[in-house]
Every structure is written in structure tokens, then in C-alpha cells.
Amino acid sequence: MSTKINISRNGLSLIGPFAFEKCNKTEILDLSFNNLSKLYSKSFYGMIKLSILDLSRNQIGQMESDVLSDLNLLSTLNLGNNYLRYLGRDIFKDLVELQSLNLGLNQIESIEKFTFKNLRKLGKIILKNNNLKSLEPLFFNLSSFYFLDISSNQIKFVHNDTFNLLSRLSTILISFNQISELNSETFKGAVNLEKLDISFNRIQKIDSNFSNKFPNLRELAFSENNLSFIEPGLFNGFVKLESLNLYKCNIKAIDLSSLSNLKLLQLANNQIKFFSQNLSLLTDLILSYNQLSNLSYPLITSKNSNLVMLGLSFCQLKYVDFDLFRNFFNLRSLGIAGTLFILSNDTFSGFKNLKHVNVLKNDVDRFKFIYPNISFVGF
Image 1 (cartoon, rainbow, N blue to C red):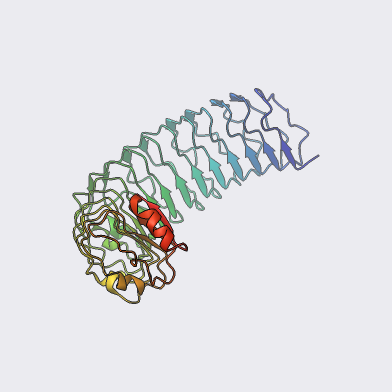
Image 2 (tube, rainbow, N blue to C red):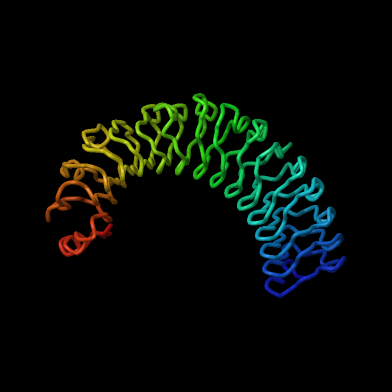
């Protein structure tokens, strides 16, 4: 008997009880892209060595509570792209070896409180693109839990105890929801969080102590939220932060002076008029579509700049000293379209490693002819 069975794309609409009774050596079962609508008890009876089960892209809306009870060695379960609306507390209880669970792209509205309890090897849960309206305490005794994707739901409220005692959790993706407030207890317990994406929500209030709760955070995305209300120093508690995305957040002023480890900073499409941060490790800085009028900043004037990408398009710059940029040995990408000064034919002469430049459309052909080794994109 083969260790892998592939019945993907076979128009399968039903799995009867004991259908795989003799498949006691099978380790991988692929049932994706079929027409299954309900999973019955004993459907997988006998598959005592099954490690990977792919049920994605079916029409599964119902699962009998003990349908997975015979799969004690299952480590990966993919139920993505189905019609599930509800998860009962016993559906996964026997999956003691489960490490990865994909429930994305269903219609899940409700999950019973102890559905994931005691799955001590479960590290990754994907619940993106469902219909959850709140995030309640669901994750109990998950000592290996490190990754949660719950983006693209309808979540308005995150309970303060949802992440309690989840010290291994390093990634939370909760973008494209309807969260309006982050208090000092939101995400409490996720003390080793390294990546948080809360972009595309409706944030209107952030507690002033929020950044002090996550000393190990390295990547933070807040784009497409209205942060016009924030105090300039709100992010200064994220002392290990390396990547910060604040695209289109209506920010007028910001202080990032304590973020000495920052390497990537996205600040495009805000209302910033003055930016004077000396962030010496930055490799990517995007300031496009702001109201900046000059570049007399320590970061820009430093001859030891690490900048690889610099975006300044559609600011209100009247003058740029390109001799400074020519000293940036690492600079490979430069956005300079839509500024208030004219680019001459020798503007890009002398750049050692420049490969990509954004300019206005009517400048593209001219510069392509003069600098064939540089790629020019028009805006």
C-alpha cells in the first residue's frame, strides 16, 4: 500500500464509513478540489499512520464530531476553502500530534471555547477570511503555538485574555478587521511577539503604554489606519523594532528616535512636514506623498548611510543635493517623481550602484537613453 493517496480533482462527493480501512500505512491523503459537503464518522478509520490530510477546496459544511478521532498521528490538517460555519469543542480533541491547522477561507462565525485546548504540539493556526466578529479566549495549553493568522474577518473586539500565557506566540496577523481600540492589555500574554500586522482596521485609540508590552517586537504594520490622534512618541517602546509600516495613517508628526535597530520604515501617504530622525541602520525609507519641503536631516546627509531604497516622490521638495546621494554606496532604488524641481540630464551621473529610479512619465525616455544601465519607471 502506497504511503500517499491522491484523489484530488476527482469529483468525489461522499466518503463512506470505513472507506480507507485497509490504508493502514498511508501517511499522506489528498482529497482537495472535490465536492465533499459532509464528513461522516469513521470516514478515516484504519488510517493509523496518516500524517497529512488535505481537504481544502471542497464544499464541507458539516463534520461529525468524531470524524477525526482515529487520526492520532496527524500533524497537518488543511480544511481551507470550505463552507464551515461552526467548530465544536470535540472536533480536534484526539489530534495530539497536530502541528499545523488551516481553516482559512471558510464561513466560520463561531468557535467553542475549548476547541483547541491541550493541542500541545499545535504551532500554526490559520483562520483568515472567515466571519468571526470577536476574538475570545480560545487558545488553552498550546505550549507550541507560535503563529496565528486571523486576518480578513469582521473582528471588532479582542478580549484581554485571548493571548494569556501564550509565551511562544511570535506572529499575529490580524489585518483587515474592524478593531477600533488597542488598550494596554490587548495581546496581553504574548510577551515574545515578534511580528504584528494590524493594518486595515479602524483604530481610533491606542493606549500610551501599548508599545511597552512587547519588548521583542521586530516587525509592526499599522498601514491604512487613522493615527492622526497619536502622540509622536507612541512607538518608542518597541526598542527591537526592525520594520515599521505606517503607510497612509494620517500622521502629522512622529518621533522614532529610540528605534535604533530600525531598518525598514514606510511612511508614505501621510501629512508629515518635518522628519529629523537619525536612524543609522535604515536600509529602506519611503517618505513619498508627504509635505516635506527639504532634506536637511542627519539620516540623509550622513556619508555612511546604509540606505538601499529611498522614496521621495510627490513630496514638496524644491531642492535636493544629489551629491549627497552619490555618496550612498548601497543605494539601488530612488523615487524622485513629482518634486518641485527640474531633473537635469546629469542628475543620475556618478551613482555607483543605482539600478531603479521612479520619475515622471515624460522624463522616462530621456533618462533611459542617457542611462541604459538604470531602469526608469514613470508615474
